[in-house]
Image 1 (cartoon, rainbow, N blue to C red):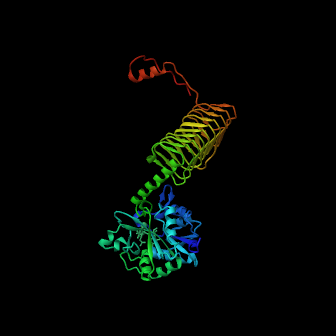
Image 2 (cartoon, rainbow, N blue to C red):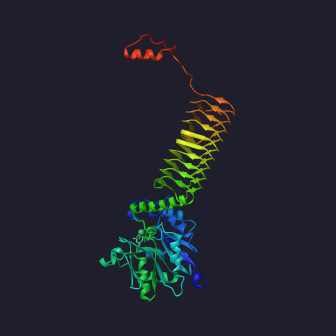
Length: 460
Ligand code: UD1
Ligand code: CA
């Protein structure tokens, strides 16, 4: 490794823009993509790039971004005077850092680590270009800045679309926003920026022209347009979500999952999938889901913050909410909602149930329509169901309550008291059968048939 190869890099992540075009009260870079904020994607990618340290530039009142960026330090850009001005704000926080600075836009979350590594590598040849910009080819560059190069392909300047002439707008090599330059040089050049342009902003992009005026060479590294798309509007966010979902679907298939209708399955960036998992069509994974090997998620399920054990079967039409822990080979069937509940190995809740704040022992059977009444309007309470217990259909378990191991609860019960292990509990109104009662009722209503008198009501 030569000295040049050993150059250290600091990243400056720009996140202070208001994101006006999102028409949102949420700062742009906090809008989620595959269940996590845009800026978190960028920071996760930077973990795979050799950067010494990272400083995030946020706007005033953007504490939520600072929280998402922790433990990286944040500096506040009080007024959004442009990308060049934003980079300057990080100077102090870098505290005399010597080495390269990588400028990263938090609104470009699809960028991958190999692309950033290629960008950094272009600065590692001595003598190399003073500034290297990450560019992309687009048939129509739209609102992106255009990279103006000389006939040898060396970068001369960057012109913003709004400031470009008609012929400059025809250039299809566009600016992704990412660039790398020596820290000392970059901050010197930033001091020379003017805001004499269409937006009256201090453009970061103008550092290229200033470097060229000093006779310094600048270069372009090209990346794939699909991963360098900037997100400025909800439309662009939706397109980026699609790109991200396709990546996650490919990764799931790669990891050994079967997806029957990949285009209808939506993952979070942290969804963890074991081998031989099967996922049917129309399944949505919110954040925090792990599927162990051999689990099956049947069509039309929604899972969030849930752990699904080996060989468990979920759905169709099931909902697992945060804290759902489904044991090995357990079954959760249609229209079953599970929250903060552990279903131990081999337990079954197959139809029309709500299980909240409960533990269900191994091989217990939860009958159709069973409801844990876990909330009294003020507090949540727990339900414990022992191993091998059988809860009859349409049972209401009024928590806090315990049903012991191997106990049986009769269908239609409202259980308010604990049931001992191996006991049988029935808690429902008794049944009255009135012979011919239906026939007499009909006759009375229609005037046809037997007109026998109605039985006397029991006197009070
Ligand atoms: C910018 C580039 C453009 C490039 C495009 C790529 C400039 C002048 N233009 O345009 O050449 O093609 O990105 O997506 O750099 N930000 C701040 N403070 C500010 C302004 C912006 O932190 O004062 C941040 C934003 O939060 C955002 C990033 O900088 O993460 C880019 O800002 P944005 O306004 O989206 O720039 P574009 O108009 O997209
Ligand atoms: Ca942008």
